[in-house]
Image (cartoon, rainbow over all chains, first blue to last red; front, side):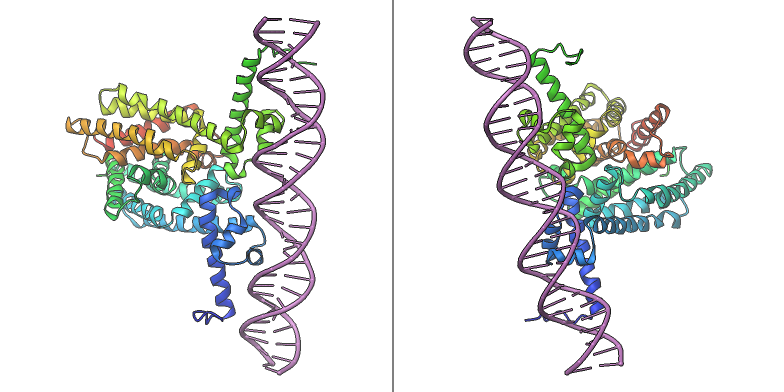
Length: 210
Length: 210
DNA sequence: GCTGACCTTGACCATACGGTCAGGATGCGC
DNA sequence: GCGCATCCTGACCGTATGGTCAAGGTCAGC
């Protein structure tokens, strides 16, 4: 009766179940919002009994918190490319590519993040004030250096960053609207490439880095 | 015992109550999402008994639908400036100004709209497919004409529009994040002007319209 | 193969939610 | 000032939700 594909040890099994639950939760939270999501639905999507979710994650909020933190990690990771570059064209270009790729590969995560921030960040306010604020200050310094070096125009770095975040996340958060305007079809590979290069072209030209 | 400030006729009173409820609903839906909002809380914010809401709006969904439709109207109205202009610099510049102003004056409405689209537009899918699709096609035609006339670079009009929407709405939808990164303070008048001019500068230069 | 820690789950609970309704208040048209 | 349609609302209802629990299963270490 037991599945053939489960030669797992107890610890492997625990990790596997947690991942299963987190993936299901991310999807459900993204589609319904925190308030609209139900533990029962998450359980159904994960293929586990509801009581089992509460064994791994004591409350709905703790599960939600874990989902949001995971997304934030991915988000931060993408930001690394910013520093590796030695100029705005390369750095910002790579950052746009990375964030567009996240929007494509993790649309649900992006939506959960957007939803969390839109609702005044009840769960990750401390992250915004510490980690995100520090990261932002660091990037502002980099951009200001590029401006001093004459490698791009004198743009307010904050608003440039907001523009990068807004534009790239839009393809995830408003993906449904974009798909609807694309005859109801998800963007094809070629269309994603168009999107990336359009965004890069406008912004990089717009800041005088091309 | 009766308020001194209520010399209202029955019809005036009806309109007033509906507006009161819609304003409260917009705020609560924006802060909690559809699923997280409760009729009781909307009633408290509006200062009316819950049963009264159900007199004016039979269901939670009908109330929500009205809120979303009102926002869509404001949204469409802002789009008029696009057509009144005779070139990209003026038209897109004015559109950015108008949408930034909406983000500033109607942040709750913007959030409700964003939330609705993020959750796959269960209520306004038909608007997306009809009104919004038509509006978009019209604007694409205008942009293509501008390109043909050599008044801006050959940019994919769709991605330009998405960028305009994304960037301007970001200041409403992610306003909390922006405020947090602004030392916890809302943007001042001067900062809003900076935001507007930064966005306009990058985009208008980016499409070769400056 | 025994034991104890870990895992699983159906059944259950208290609460909060959207929505209803009956009965009373109010104000318009006559 | 009367009658009637409209408006208002406290009390109530069925349901669905987040969370609990006790009883049983399973696996690693000895």
